[in-house]
Length: 428
Ligand code: UDX
Image (cartoon, rainbow, N blue to C red; front, side, top):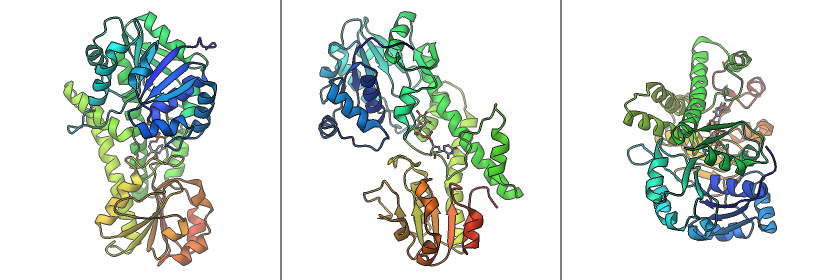
């Protein structure tokens, strides 16, 4: 795409998506005001620091603040006044019935409606129930303002890269002129644009996340099959991944998928489908396989600990839901830890980004300290540093040499030579 014309943009919500969006749009040359109701967060951001761990984001925010292209405030009205585009980057947590809770989006829409610039565009980046654009339009109460769905596909850990080098930009609008105006926001990035209606755009977002979750559940199920029949899942994945229709990415077995999106969005999509009269049984299976995967990892630990976890010390390497983030939301590591504790184990955890207490487990600041006196260690997050540990030192610290490598990160042969009992996922 070509160089953008600079636009005034309001971003509501300085969470993970809002911050990345605001910083990247400022980087692309727009004048961005980003608001959040959390005043402490706003103060921190205004001083050029960020409350999350995300590669490249802090630098981008500092550059934006210094150039005057980016500003933070606690007032939504300030963010949207004179803005040609208002981007909603708000939380839609899982509600009590499994469906997404829209109360924050609706409250903000009610608040900003009267203050939006005439003929401006509201762009929804939150993952909202299919068909929500109509509801948001009603709450806004502005017939001159257009509502567009523009879902984000940002991966934590590479969100800045994903925003500036997207695989695709999905714009769900009811008329072409609005869609073209929104696409101008992304001028300066180069990606195919899918122009469609809002309902289809919202469905693309849910379907993409559900498909990726299905791919991981599938490979985790294949790993279980490999263990049963004596195959090696690593080679199965190489063989499968060479088929371009399958592809090798998202084909790594692990402790199950987690994070801020997959668990919430898969449950939401089952619910959305149900309400629309479709029983999405395939997706229910994907979710069930994921729950089983947490159980399977805990069972492996029990097996290596000699059959029972009662009174056993377990070391946990990695607590975040994946490497290169500090995010603990729906972390498979914590799901496994909970099962270990329920079975009577004491869990001592180390994660390179974890500097606070976590309920139910002891947190230490060193990988070796985590395995002190442990009968088994579970490697749950694929932090690279775990590859390079001194495994003799690890073994000496442990009560017995046993490792569950739930990410297939380590070298089984080397560990077995060093006297460890080793169990990976789908590896004999
Ligand atoms: C995801 C989507 O990728 C992104 O497009 C969307 O907008 C938000 O949700 P993210 O939550 O950052 O991004 O995590 P992602 O990298 O997709 O991983 C999701 C989970 O699947 C993690 O728990 C990860 O460890 C697991 N995973 C992923 C595997 O176990 N194996 C794989 O091969 C890939």
